Length: 145
Image 1: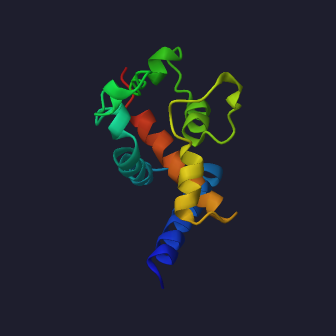
Image 2 (image 1 turned 30 degrees about the vertical axis):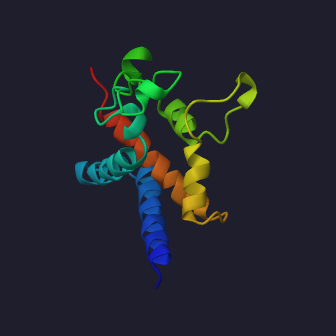
């Protein structure tokens, strides 16, 4: 079994379990929450810290070089009237569904990037979904009150 196949199978299993938990359970347990958040933490630290910083404050090493300051990701709930904007965060990270009529966006289209990393096949979209959802849940976990 190749490394890609193993990773693909592991991630597909994670996504399947994650979606089952969301759809069938009254609420995931703390241990299940922690697995999802830990995966999001890993994704965040691999892809997002360079701009948003280790703490999510928008102070990563690349922040000074960008025309637009990266968002402080710890303030999303506060800036949204106390409600975490789950699906807006998801769509922003994914980026594939946004209308680009307002000009280029400063953030990469992570959905497209993750799909290429996973192999680019239609079924790989499930892996992309899992990766983005893990990131969204991780960001929810670092919201300041």
